[in-house]
Every structure is written in C-alpha cells, then in structure tokens.
Image (cartoon, rainbow, N blue to C red; front, side):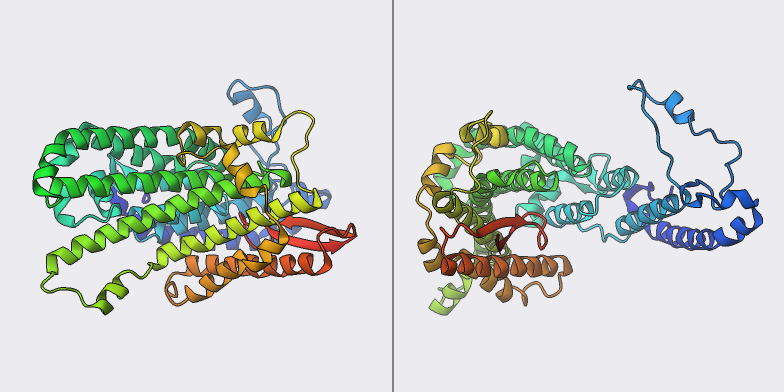
Length: 473
C-alpha cells in the first residue's frame, strides 16, 4: 500500500515495513526447532519437503486447490514450495522491493534505464517488477510527476527552458513520448518477454525517426534557411532526432545482449553475434558523442565572449568518459569477433555447419528484426562475411583489441569512482580483456594449427562477453 502511493511518497515508510517484515521472517525461521519439538514424533521424517515448520500437515489448505482454480491450461502438477524455500522466497522478494524503495527517483532517463537493467540482473519476481513499473509510469508521467516531454528534453541534452516549448504538441512528438512510456514498461517484464517486445518496437522507433524528420523539415525547413541554425526550433529538432537514433541503438544493443542471458546463441554463432553487437555499439557511441558535442556547443554559445584559445579547443575535443566506456565494449566485441573469425578461418572450428540451416539463414533468424528496421543502415550478411573472411592470428597479434579494452578500462576508473555499478562493469571488462589477451598469445605462440589445442568460450567473468579458455586435449 505504501509503495503504491503516488509519486513515490510512501517509499520511505515502505522501507520501514520491509525492515520489520525481514525481522519477523528471521524470528519465524528461528522458531522452527521449537515447533518441530512440539509436534508429534512421526512428523520428523522428510522435514525438508514439508510446507510447515513443524512438519505437520497444514490445516485449512488443499495442495490441489490451485490446479482446479487455475486458468484453462493442460493438466500439470503444481509443486508447493517447502517451508524453508518459502521463507527464502519472501526474503528475496523483500530485498528486491527494498532496492526499489531506496531508488532516488532520478529524473534522468539514462539513469532510469541503467537502474532498471541493473535491477533485472538477479531476475526479480513478478511482484517486484510490477511495483517497479507502477513507480516509473504513473498517469503518463515519469514517477507521476515529470512530464515525458521534459524527460525527453533532459535525455536529449536540451536546456530546461525548452521543456514548455510548443513543439511538444506535435503529433509525432506525442507519439515519441508514448514510445518512451512503452519502453519503460517493457524493460520491467521478464527477460524472454522483454527481448521479444524490444525486437518489435525497434521498427516503431525507426518509423518515428523518419516521421519526425519529415515533420521538422516541413515545419522548420524554410525558417532554418533564413536564420542559419540560430532558430530554437531547428536546434531543438536536431537534438531530438539525434537522441531518437541513440535510443534506437541502445534498444538494439539490449536486444542482442539479452540473447546471451536467454542462451539463444550457440558457440558457432558467437562470431556473427559479436560482429553485430560491434556495429550497433559503434553507432550508439557515435550518436551519444554527437549529442554531447551539440549540447556543449549550445552551452558555449550562450557564454561565448572571446575567441577560444588553442588549449580550450584541445580540452573541448576530449572524448567524454561515457563514450570511452562504450569504446571498452566495442573493443571487446571487435576482439571477440576477430578471434572467433581467425579460429574459423585457420582452425576450422566454431563454424555453422548444421544439416538444417545455412549460416546465412541463421544470420537472418537472429537479426531479422534489426534488418527490417535497417539497424544499422547498409548492414547485411555480406558485410559480416567481408569483415571476417580474412581474419588471421598474425594480424590479431599486431593489433590486439583486448589490450585497448584493458587500457581504457583502467584509465576510466578515476572517472567513475563514485559509480559502483560502472566500476563493477569496468572490473569485469578488465578480467575478460586480460584473459582473452593471454589466450590469444598462447594460441599464437603454440600455433593455431596444433591439433592438441582446444579452445572453448565461457561466461565466467561477464554475462555477455565470453572468455576464451585454451586447453590441451
């Protein structure tokens, strides 16, 4: 009840109730020995499978009741959680609810998306995910207080003064706001449903970009030629279009990453998957950087009094840490693509030689939704083949992508020292890059054609970026 109060007003009180609940659960758990000793002797047998602490049959409950009252489905046995697992379930649920209640209600959409993705990693229960969705989207607003257009303006790095601009009444801008709301709702679903829905809404984001571009050209085209980009509407439209592209590529990257979580890719398909992740992340970093550059230019024009000195220009063109953070992932994806391609080309392993589907057909099956939305433009199976056809270990040693990822991850520590989630991600990147760099050196030193050398890939350091393991058979 506290968590369902509008605009997150009951979250602090909800945390007190959660703490009280956890305390009560601990007392209940400790009472098990007393209850067992008070129960009849024959209840001691098979206590681990009992649904009560004492081991006695529960009074007033029928285990078959759910199967008779469930929705029309094929007959199935419904397994009741034993008493200990039920306690653990409620502890886990309360822990996830506490994470939601402790959230700071950050108005930044980027921060919201990061929080939801992080929250989903331990696979929270439906109840916790439903409460998160209710918190994020209320009355068509973020947290029930921030209008979606204001959220978009903030995400697109626009000044606060434009959040009341008339452009928000544009039909396609209103549709864009609805897409943002739908995205937040989708991200609160389970991994399988989330991936399915993300793949479908990619087309909607691509279409809305085209519609916005045409609408802005029609509305501001003549005006922009007169005022030469000094018009507020033109700058506003450019910021929004760049942000829509950036968000589209973020959705595409999330769609691809979830495939690893759901174990949809086989080792023979890793090469094409990492290649597609690489080309999507390149575009995402490009759009993110362009958005930040435009935002900085807008801020400078306001306070510009004299010509910039060469030192100022050099400082202004430093690549932002957020872009370099993406570059770490890009280097890992590119390195894994080329490592797998070299293994395919020289060792003839990790090849798609199934009896039912050709490699081209597998490519279409995995990336059809991305291809239909032209994400990215001019990317096809032929592009993948052209990129990987000539990958060799001799070339990989000369330009080691894993060394780049490791170097960048170490350099970025100081930039994200106050962000524990990103620091944890940087440590994972370092581990993957270091182990893959060592594996690459071992393969090149021993010889890629050595038949006793066996290479496999494991996800023991990162959920999405594999680590190469080299063994002798």
